[in-house]
Amino acid sequence: MINYTEKIPNNVDLGRDRVLQRALEHWQPAYMGWWYDMGPNESHNYEVYLRTAISVEPDGWAQFDYVKMPEYRWGIFLQPRDEKREVNFGIHKGQPAWQEVPGEYRSTLRRVIVTQGDTEPASVEQQRMLGASCPSMYDLRNIFQVNVEEGRHLWAMVYLLHRYFGRDGREEAESLLARRSGDADNPRILGAFNEPTPDWLAFYMFTFFTDRDGKFQLCALAESGFDPLARTCRFMLTEEAHHMFVGETGVGRIIQRTCEVMKENKVEDPSDVRALGVIDLQTIQKYLNFHYSVTLDLYGSDVSSNAANYYTSGLKGRFRETKLEDDHVLADAVYPVSEVVGGKIITKNVPALTALNERLRDDYIDEIADGVGRWQRVIDNAGIPFRLTLPHKGFHREIGNFAGQCISPDGEVLSEEAWKSHESEWLPSSKDYTFVQSLMSGRVVELGKFANWIAPPPRGINNQPLNFEYVRFN
Ligand SMILES: [Fe+2]
Ligand SMILES: [Fe+2]
Image 1: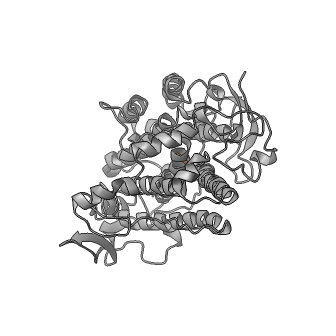
Image 2: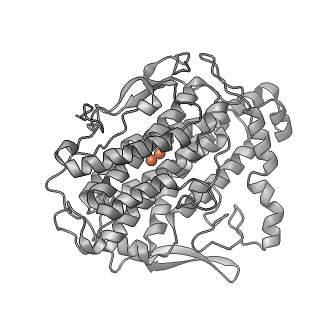
Image 3: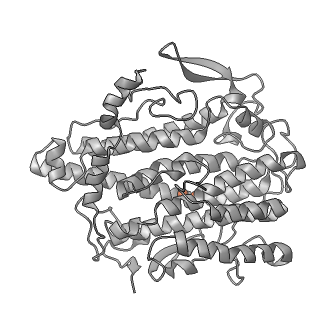
């Protein structure tokens, strides 16, 4: 069980380590200052029907109750230790998993933890204004749940920095509260986390696409030979599943509502669809193209010696590393990557160690394709002849082999001029954003009511009815 009687709830016996406890108690007010400034706007007095982790066991970690978000029990929860766990890949394979940071990997490991940690507060910042345009109380509650858990993920990474990295770690923990999403002078570390999330379609796309990048990064870190990182990430993954649920069902409900309105009114032309106050499928496709492509960049360069080093040294594994059947060293293995040569996309084999970013990206793409297939079924079931597609991997990329190339969603290599002439068909234009935001000009919070542009979910949260009071505004 998690000890909630302490100032910082934890299952790491924090009370036994006075120095660490004091360091974290010093960071806590700074964190609260950040939450008050950058957490969900005007929400501090709301009572929200939230789940809180009460135990890290699979059956006991979600307790639902009304909580004011600043009083949420943020804390430090690690999956219990497996005494027999080993380093499962790379040159240290077979050694006992490390309980302390190996000196030679200290700065690399710190960088990995800081990069992951930076994404957590970033998404809260990106989403902070959306409460004012929520489509229902149910959805408002869901975004707040995502936000408090991202806050807890920041705690999880800060614990590792404080506990294992001394003064450098404490400084990094302060910097995590100082950077701001989209700030010109002190932005968040990764590109997608500096993009605005201006409306609820963007929010659902973000939680479907970008939180899923989070899942894959956490899965790779959950394989780490550095055991405290692995155990921390395992517990974070249990929370991440809800974020992706919010995204997938959110987009699915928007598609469903659009299809209903198209059928009822027998319209197909996007402007007729828009006139009925729902989001046309073409615009949904453009949002998909945008969020997919900026998220693919998060995996980094297709060929990367850093990725090889992380793996070889046992710091970051592959997706489901221990379930894979090979030597877990990859000294002789190869992996295919694509690049543009002479105006054509070609695929060639490179040493698998250097292609680990690309491999994780491909694992991610497989899962994304399944989700997009589920959205497609909503359209098919309505009998509407429209296909949602995942654009080519090289479309609209800024990092890796496709950076600087002009690739169409179909995977055609184009001139810059030709690409630009189609850009507004492929990516949301300012007009598209203006339209989507025009549907979301105010919040819908009457009990059981949903905005016109989104279908209600089939069921409420924690078996509550849809007209449950998920948020008390006070
Ligand atoms: Fe997270
Ligand atoms: Fe998340």
